[in-house]
Image (cartoon, rainbow, N blue to C red; front, side, top):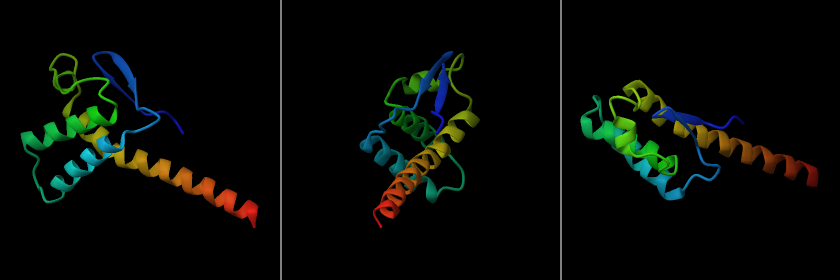
Length: 107
């Protein structure tokens, strides 16, 4: 599985091997708030960007992400936010595969 990364201010940051559970729960809170929204507002966008910062272990700040000169473009923030769930599910699937392999070896 390739390591997920993001470039902020010309520096590459990698998603930690261990995603903090509280950061993921904060991400889930933002996702829940977005479920009933048809148009994103400033607060939603900032919440998504902050969730990305937290899941990446706060290696960069919200100000870094939003900086006009070196931050991320809106499309990058939206894409990165959406990709977080896929990344977590990919890890879940790998874990389930490992359990399945171990279970079938025991049988």
